[in-house]
Length: 252
Image (cartoon, rainbow, N blue to C red):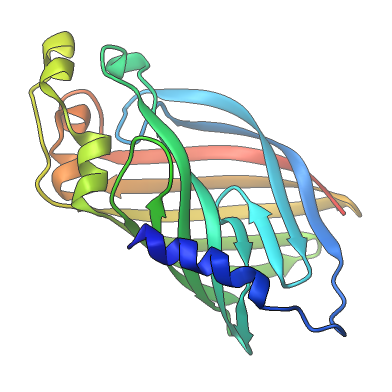
């Protein structure tokens, strides 16, 4: 996806006015999460992390959260929406098994998301490209998610995801340069095509007070193709990745 296309969307934004009669209010949640996750995408070593959690909406117009980024529902038609967004891609730290590698700096990404939510299910397709950092190329993500109240004060959700990363993206995240190979002892490797990442995740949210809730979450991801074959994964890591954690949230 061309970066010039994303800049064009940003240029058009001030030209599109919000209807004067529209009334919007802030809502969302603030909290903290404790998560056990791999050191890096493809690692077989896990690390506990305590992170802030943020999920804010301004009516149906703007939203901000860690997964979907900062987005604007530019077009809304019944159950459909189209949203340009700014996200963040974390890159890859040079820690653990990759301590002798050059770090891959994360950065901002820009993209477009199309969503369809006819009821308890929500389907989305997004395309994004890095704007800053060390990663190039583009990434496509398809998600399906079910969310429903299963008992008083208890909501459950689950859904699959499918991510395609382009050749350039795969090279930056899973390639092993000559310098990296010489320092680490892993084989030199240069991916020649993109790869797919398959995922499945779920959560349980319990509202134990009017303004407070706790959420348990878990997920599993499987790397395929040139990512799975990278020495970063095949020699030093694992193609199957898991995640588990809990989030304590204050709602407003």
